Image 1: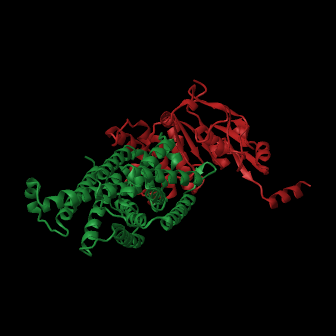
Image 2 (image 1 turned 90 degrees about the vertical axis):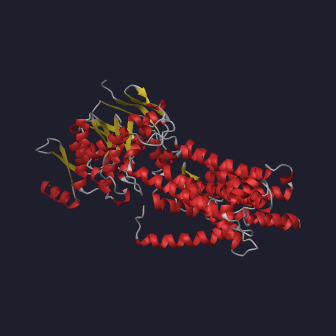
Image 3 (image 1 turned 180 degrees about the vertical axis):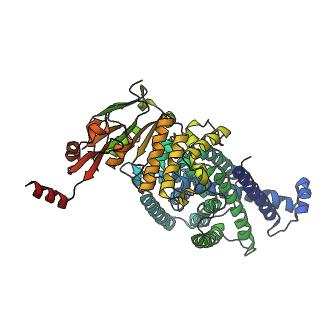
Length: 336
Length: 271
């Protein structure tokens, strides 16, 4: 095996091992602490409070954390690749803002009571509409203007958040509470079907994105270069946009606004293992999942018995890590 | 096949602004051809029309008798490789970059390069003298080395036609000659047909067998360097007075620029 692939394999296995450790720690920690050695016994007994805590509360949360974190990391990685810009992620592009607005409209109209599919659907439609808007408004003279696109994304975020404030100001106290709670971001999702949906979407996204790993590598050299290398660049970009909107939109619908994962995780992965998408997509998925599982443990335990919104943790921790990494990068720019 | 690349009355351009007139010329297999002309004469537009980057409004580009307008991106990438004016840079190793030249040959869901891909990439890295820095990042290379890496990638596509947009314009004379000598060698040894845009008329004269001279979006004249690079043609197209002599060693035309002071001295002496 070539040295490069061996490095990738070690990196992937290392991340996977770290993820498993984090899962085990997360499953045993909380208001009720459960020793790891007791878990097989509790699971086989199928009764009691501890069994309920494990299977109804902690395990679904961990699954959701991995699915949401993985999706956000993956989406960030894909978008940064397409736009060849390390600052792009679902939030800076306004995708999450659009998804939030879609979800808020559904809550205010009371449509989420109609079917459990309404919230994720609204998130997806909001995300897709935003990405379409950003994309068409950023095209100038037939080519995509990256700076313009970032600006338009930020503007859409502002417009979406103002529109949400408007919705909140006219909504009932009950709706207001659910919107606020949901904006802050939480992995507390009682509906297991939504958790399965999220998991399914994230794995689907991983498979689709991975099938475009080599075209994404070529797109890093620019769209026209990718075409010269035989890639159907615009088709690939369109498919990847839709998949990214699907993942980001449903993340927002299920878990609310969880920032920074899509920005920092792909960045860190690139620094450690390089920019080849054949490993960085997997790395971003596992790394995003790992980051969210760990953040969730912190959110649950740091002010126990109360719980911090997970968006607070990812925002603060992620932002700090990012600043430290960037300031170190300047001194030794070659890390990959 | 006498006409390997045939440009058959093509016109292309940007919406509203600049557009090419009907451009026609053809190249024999294995020829080393250059497109020359002043800034804004449509060289790059023509280049982008041939490479498929700009849609053609009229006309056809035939490669070995096939209309490449009907080619898929992949077929096109297998038959022609393009080296742009600004070589790519980034945090990617030279080897990985060159290996991307194998992308047009990948099968569906083939995630890893085959040993054959590696062997082909190595062959062309050695040929272009880039193998010694194959593990360096593109961003660590000098402009000349990046240009060589870009050519190595293009060769790894194993194309029949190599298109280059001003491959020497950002390089010093050492690297200019190095790149052009490499292209000449590839042209002779691999029988590769080369078509490049080139600004420097002396280099064009020295290296190309065939020149297409553009003016205001049209072909002004075409032929061997001796036929094209006459002082009348150059004065018409570039609106600049020049002196052309013959290089005593290569017997190709050599172009000398004329300064204002020299012009007035000459006129005084004649008058």
